[in-house]
Image 1 (cartoon, rainbow, N blue to C red):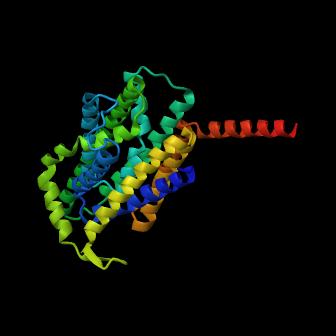
Image 2: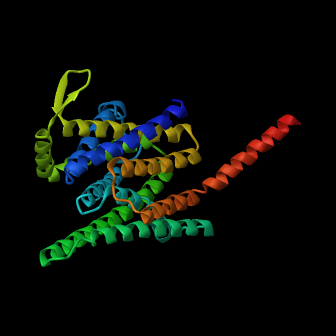
Image 3: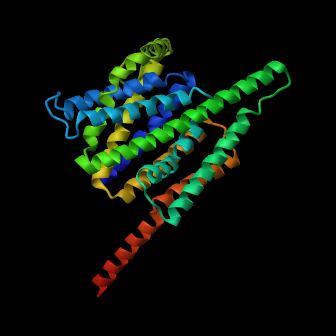
Amino acid sequence: MHPGLALGLVFGGCCSNVVFLELLVRKFPGCGNLVTFAQFFFIAVEGFIFEANFGRKQPAIPIKYYLIMVAMFFTVSVVNNYALNLNIAMPLHMIFRSGSLIASMALGIIILKKRYTVSKYASIALVSLGIFICTFMSAKQVSSLSTTSKEEEEESISAFLWWLLGIAALTFALLMSARMGIFQETLYKKFGKHSKEALFYNHALPIPGFLLLAPDIYRHALLFSQSEPFQIPGFGLSLPIMWFYLIMNVITQYVCIRGVFILTTECTSLTVTLVVTLRKFVSLIFSILYFRNTFTVWHWIGTFIVFVGTLMYTEVWNNVRSLQDGKGKKDEKKQE
């Protein structure tokens, strides 16, 4: 597949996925488990047919390692979903998860005994600063409710405590996600890279775990069914609008994941890094503008610092300069 098409899948799929996710959580903030189950089920069925060949194909990596990876992956997904129900706004949720660089570096130093350059530490400092600014400003907004009465003061304190619990949940998910990344890195070094296989098993093996969440999933499924009807253009069919949003969220999530996979096989790591970073930024900007989320000047400054730090960490400018120098030398040779 042409890299340009993969680029379109990533931007189109991932950015539209954020829109449908926010449409869902704005109406029902606690519907994350239903959304995650639908995504996992769809990708698991697709992988069972096309990757596992209806169970006839043996995995290249032993199942026991996938079970460990799945336990981490499932935990991260569920905790991130619950954070949205704890006074955590979608823009802050997206920015906070950009701190994966910090968590990965910290655990890399502790577990893998890695050492990094000064520029890497500087980039992590920038990302940390950006996340701190956005987190602090969001905390200020949550705790700035009017306290003209004792009842309102108690509501303000309660909201702030729930927000602190949400921040704790995001922090835990961030560290667990980084640990999963290190586990995958050591696994791929030992058995080789099998991204498509890992995608299937990461989504198929956790399916039984959703039985623990069945009451919550069923309750939100009923709520979705009670939402206002939506007429599908050109088909003459109608279904509850929340189910339409969920179907579109699942489809766009699959398109997003497939696009990233194709991009990693067709393009250099520099291109993939640029695309993923820019995709996050575009999704964030669109979420703020389209849904009119509260975003102050300080939020914008924090966001800018986060992405500058991310680009520094990936050494984008150095790699671009190297590519330009290499291209210049080739042009000189041609002229000679």
